[in-house]
Length: 91
Image 1 (cartoon, one colour):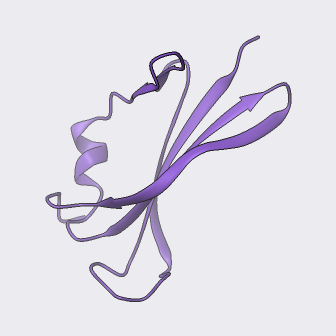
Image 2 (image 1 turned 180 degrees about the vertical axis):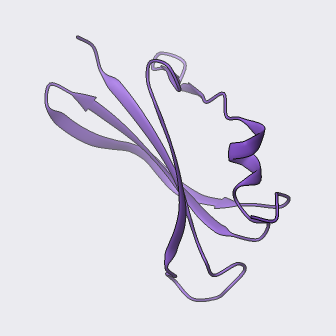
Image 3 (image 1 turned 135 degrees about the horizontal axis):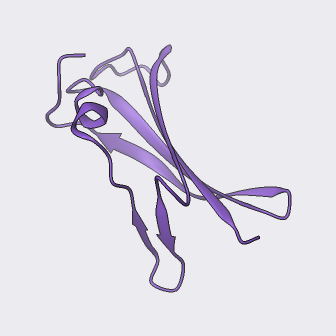
């Protein structure tokens, strides 16, 4: 069996706050093969997120993402970073 990938998007309660970390209030997880496609040769990640998932992250939330690869019982973080939500629902 080949590698499996997981993308986690998380955000906290400190919308536009200067604090480094606030309490986690939301998480969206997508995993391959059904919810996430990773094309390793081109370095492309495709995540067909829904409108509901997109709207669940409040505008101004400090969000982050982590892309992990699971292969042969080993998990590696391939990419991670911060996201800025410029528009979104009022969740």
